[in-house]
Image (cartoon, rainbow, N blue to C red; front, side, top):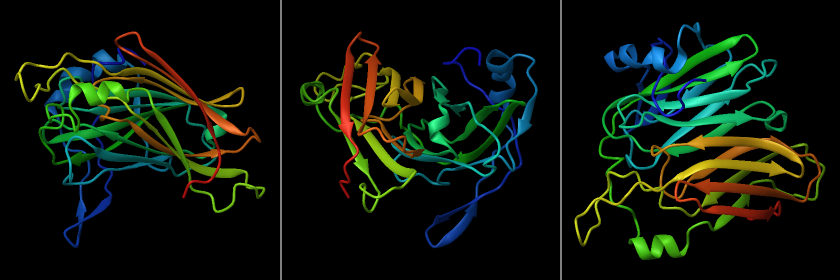
Length: 270
């Protein structure tokens, strides 16, 4: 998919409910002049189809925290292989949050991440399958996510940078369970370049994870080419098919040239 860090996606009329203040709110994608300007940069002349019946995406209509908006992708047709997906926040300064590539071990896709939303915006996903590109998404009311102050001062954030944690959600990892659910968290400030130092009031230079790989033994589960719209301390929750390996290996690099790697046992932690 062309130009990973530009922006993209099309307009769809898919609807989905999201509970907020005791109500079910419909927040489908809306018409977007931003999309009209950017679609060709991202997709060129490639045809874009609806993801209806293949993939659904959930996101809150009103985000509790614009700096950590949860986005969940759920495959609705197990027979269709989803090779990749691009997550886009139309109105962000760098709209393409990330390009994700999925290995066969991800099985029927169930994947969650957190993104920054800088102003009221469509949040979209373009899924790539053998027959082309399919789009769905939600309209999210949130603002200030890209410029929100980091939760820790720079020294504290850098001191813990690169630490990783795996949480497994299986009731008993010793049982023969081909399908598992896990969550990986990586300590990293993921500075957007739009945040200010709370003491000097100077802008903090952009510094974020630009590449991530998650492996199960010698099998890659998924990879990410990331941008500034991925939240601070990135978290990814996902289902996968267990191949018998004892741990997951996470490899990451950031825009300052740092490399991080950790082998994380699949032991149950919750």
